[in-house]
Image 1 (cartoon, rainbow, N blue to C red):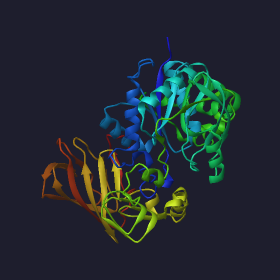
Image 2: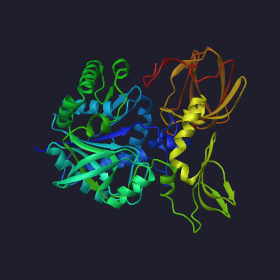
Image 3: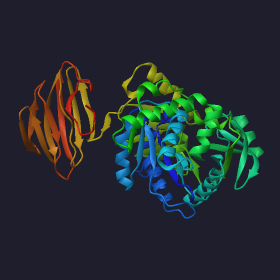
Image 4: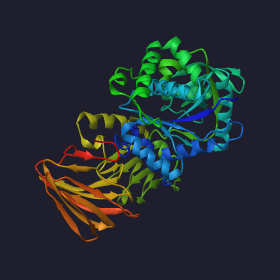
Length: 480
């Protein structure tokens, strides 16, 4: 029997060059693009279509490797595209080396070590899926022959934001790899393009679990041992085989290293399939700009913008009109709590700004004014000494935890839908234009038992209004 091909979706990277839209609590894969779809939504849809691809054995399973805090966000996207996934959940990031090694142990245990993994980062765009499918079939055939296969992309301009692969001799429907090259400067990238023997390193991989684990034993014994031990502990303690949670104490000891550095650059079994399928990792605002049609002056926007005497400017605006007058070569990224204005040639350096924001300890490094929760979302409308005002939306059939606060009281006013409220020993329903007061210390819960969205305005008053002033008594999402 031919081995299964299992798509493995990596959904971890923050995407610091896409600040201020990408944040730690709302990272790059979940950002909505110009068509209203997120990158991870496109990736899940792409993985789902692979199950129907002729030339591959039938399969309807996939795995997602992500941080615990993104689990419910991934589930929402899966529901939207009509797919399901198993999960391997990390307590914190440790780069792709440990993550891919862990999932190889898991899939070898479940399917046998000849299972083929197709590793797909969740922040890529692929425009030509037919060409992508051909590359996947070529990669699958090489992986069945014990190669660690990476997907190279035929370059069409001297990009400095990608790593490169120097192709070697022909191997079946692919090539050997002479060397991996880190992100080059513009002169080097131009030389690679003119040479014709280099490909962009996409970060997509295809290999059998057996080949990867055997190569780890040779070149990275420590990572092999630690990930094997960690997986054994997961299996012993897990009550849900579709959601495997990595224990912090072991994972904390693992090196923070990419799969390229720990294995691909060392192994003698590495091969490449070159693809020309309209690929982008959407790693910078310049890459986002290239996805949007431009006017005759080279201007484009996501959201409303007015361009007057303006050339080569890209605007992304969420909540208001942005007008430009007498400017050129700018990126303007406007959110509700942060504004980025950058020279169009400096988009690769936005991560310098995010590093500065982190150094200053600003909250905008982690989260937006709107924060997603498994039950819905809340937006901070206004806050000041002793008060905070939120807009809270609760999905149909969802429920917040049974909880209480030590330092704040809350006033709830329903503006849309119907709320089922537990307040102390009472449980009752309030509807639009009705309100309820929750004193500090009172156990309470907010539920939406209807089949429509619930929206309310919450006014918090108290001496401390931090999000960590929540004592959960009961929670359907396992957060107690």
